[in-house]
Every structure is written in C-alpha cells, then in structure tokens.
Image (cartoon, rainbow, N blue to C red; front, side):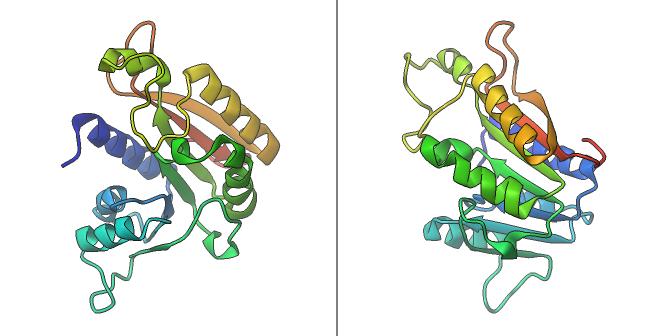
Length: 204
C-alpha cells in the first residue's frame, strides 16, 4: 500500500498529465506499476507504456495490472528497457514521467539520460520527481543519510533546479517547479517536482 506521501506524488503527477492533454504516456522506471494503474483509470490516456531494467519489478507490475501473454491490455504495456539508452522505439509519446527514479542513476550517467529522454524521445511534457535532501532532517534522518540504499544522490532544491534549468536550455524546453507534501518554511517539501514543456507547446 502506498504511503500518504507517495499517494500524493501519484495524484500530483496524474493531475499534471491530465492538464497537459497528453494521451500517450511513458513511465520511465515504472517499478511495480502504481502510476500506470492510476493512469489507466482515466480514458484520456489512450496508450501507456512502462519500462524498467528490473525484471522482478516488471513481473510485479504485470501482476498488479493484470496483464500477461494471455490477457493483454490494448491500452497498456510494460517491458524491459532503460531510459539511459537512446531507443528510437521510445519516441512518439506526448509525456514522459520519471517518478522517484533519477536519484537511482549514477551522477556521471545523467548526460546519457538527458540525451535519451530530451534528445531522442522528446515528449512535449516531462515530469520528474525526486527527494528534497533539505527535508531529510524532518524525517528524523541524520546528516548524510539517504532515504533509500539505492539512491546514488539526493539533491537540495537549488541543485535540482540548476540541473533542470541546464537541461531545459540545452534541449529547447521551459521548466517550472512544484513541491509535493507538507511544506516547511525553511526546508520546503519532502518531494520536489520539475515540469518540462517543449518550447512552442502549451504549458502545464
């Protein structure tokens, strides 16, 4: 069962995608399929694809979504794939989502992610959520501890915003930011979200 914060993340992303008008959405690092399950409930989304490099997570997603070789879903599929690879078969989507996934990438590999997502896939809308490191102390965590052992880094708000601004400038997008979760006056919220919109497209 999703925690209240994770549910708020899911709800925020679904709202942004509905507002964007997207009908074809790719979930980059779909895990066990929670976002795909939430999106499938909305008829606006005509084609949904989730990719992940974790075969066990993909098996869990198929189970949660009730899809397999014998019971396919015409609107939805999950498959093995990496958002570090510039795969031309992953183009043609209106929106891409990276929900709590970018922090699992080694920092030195982020340029590969940028080229694949913003250079090759080039969806009109890209949503990225990631932990706000400044908030960790309010979760009772000691300095330097990360929220998950698989996290390769966790960004403070300024770091995240600087990286996103560079990605947007280099690839022809505009970017805005939002907080998810209860806000602290000094430390912001537990989760930070970036909303990229391709230049010339209607903003979120």
